[in-house]
Length: 477
Image 1: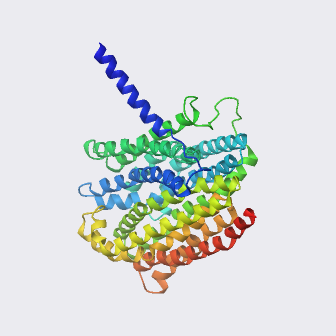
Image 2: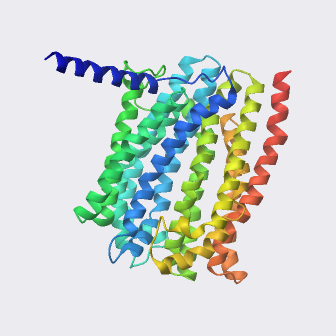
């Protein structure tokens, strides 16, 4: 009995130690800025790698379904615009509310910060319900509009109809995590994602292969896993026993979100929404053009390249999103030197990493492709497309750094404009024009991306330098 009691106390002690470590809060106002960014970015990097596994693991397993892997992968690729649209609405409120929340924290306006977070949550729930209903009713016509064929529609429809049922889980977990990170609890944010991702990795092979559910099994594993993540995030932000200083208020609150606060959140979040929405638009346009000029195999090629790009961008997003609440907090606290230092560290770290990625693609393309497919026909089509698509990848540093700075400092107009500029004004027209009028065929679709990286990235970064730095110098005076 004594041994059992001793063992129980030992387990409780270690569990408590882990929770204390996870509840450690980053101090945005004091200490070394680079260290603060690293303390935020490292857990975010782990969280984003794990979060990416939700979709990447699905694609890897689906591509290996005997006899129908390539066709099923192309069908899942057709669902990406819809999934991206859901993510766009999630970011509309999460990425729009979190910087305002952090700025309010920096100004010591605790009631305002709490109001912003609660309003964002109610917006997430209301929008999630609407998207779930619309997606369930109009799944088939939406997929046909995004380029589905009679061959690919069964795979796409089977996946999407199940995935759409988990919309509330996605929006709660992903939409509220920025508010956990904006309080300095990036390790808790990491755990929110980890719980769901581990469940997804374990459930995927069971549902896809053991139970023989194929693409439907992948979707089912994903929504169950996201449900676990949503439950953990909600619990952390509501429980009186958690370390969170700002909590969701479940009692004594109006059902509908406050109008003025909602408009402020939406106006700033539009940049993140536009970026995600235009990603979905670009994916739909690319799939449609590729289907015309190359057929289903090139839709599968784009699915693989998009997946690889997502993997490569994870550290970049970790750095810029790790820096974002620090920039917002210190901007609200009127500490321009720390804002400027954070901008410099963010751009330098992202630039070094993207240069390394570009070189890796040029030197080892076949090795990277093997992660996603063993089909020799698909690999042969993907190799030349890969070199085109990832050319000038380093210029994405300028786009991400500028966009993050505009969003973190509440510069909504510039953030929205440059989200639209790169994707809608450059990528979409080039994707349509280059294959048809310049005789480039499918190559034109893949070349459009690096052209937009160079032009869009340089335009956004130059504007940031010419507008933000003078404001910070004036604040310093």
